[in-house]
Length: 428
Ligand SMILES: CC(=O)N[C@H]1[C@@H](OP(=O)(O)OP(=O)(O)OC[C@H]2O[C@@H](n3ccc(=O)[nH]c3=O)[C@H](O)[C@@H]2O)O[C@H](CO)[C@@H](O)[C@@H]1O
Ligand SMILES: C=C(OP(=O)(O)O)C(=O)O
Image (tube, rainbow, N blue to C red):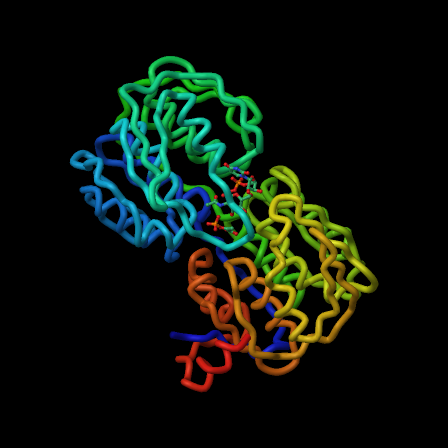
């Protein structure tokens, strides 16, 4: 087991290139099951979620070959192998095997998904959608069993705006007979990316990016090539880090409109940001103004950037309130930030941050992916050395964060955990 060490205080300068979007990638790979031939996805991030999905595709009989950041998946010989446990529990997006396998085989057995522990993360809307398409869905000993004689298009109204349910229903509906309409659909850019791949395979999906998606089903899907969109959450994380410790940092390979909710808030705080076609130029200008944030579905402020932004708000003058309306308990990073001398209290689904605080290096634990990103940002700002464990969470979503930060001038390295560390971290 390794820990990440950061010597705080160093200014960041230079260019960081953003990788392909995790939340697209984790849906694009299962979507290839539907093609029954060869699909190439270009520009995938090198993160542990992708490694696991690759293995799951091989477990059901797929052939996966890799050239640099590109994967080619041949799904011709895949079978409806049950995937009840083990790897599926290591990530959230294994739930996309439900929609994709149901679409292709009309049958699937998939363990309940894992992913970041952010409080309750039900999948009732996914199941409601599959049932509306004609599947019988049961839950037995932690696995979801799905079976349909045939899938028939239906009108499905989502009670909750859900990224996962919107994509999962799309995956099954592209192979259903007739027309499916998803109402109150989510509008995140990753959903558009998945629909673009499916349409390149021969699907007929209209309306993605709005809250009504119309799908005309077909069994005639084929192989294709697709380039993934850049990761707006990784880009946002580096933008926040650049605001905290720039210097001048260029965030390269971004779609600036995907980040407008963040850049608007950062400008309100006093951060200087120039947006060009595919890059952001960020300059950290102290003092920072305090501001209030409420996470919302896209195009609102993303919950996945709430935790890293909280770290930056510890540097703002006065009181800021961060409210998470998507995951009301997504605050596991707060105790760790307090350990580093931040002044933050939690009231209901809000964190109330009073700044500015000089953060101090400490031994802290990343309990989930974006908590990890928040702690890395705190380590860059802190006096002295910060030690972070829980790297397995960070590596689910950040392609080589150590190298990217080192290239910007941060002092960051990994070390093996000692027995003393193991004992210390068991108690926090
Ligand atoms: C792999 C992936 O893409 N993960 C992202 C995805 O997660 P995920 O797709 O799991 O998140 P959803 O958009 O589904 O969840 C949004 C809200 O709806 C609720 N809900 C969801 C489904 C359901 O059937 N019933 C229900 O009540 C959830 O508990 C949550 O409160 O979107 C989240 C919200 O932007 C992000 O934080 C995650 O990074
Ligand atoms: C919550 C996240 O991921 P997942 O849904 O994969 O757990 C995230 O990317 O911040």
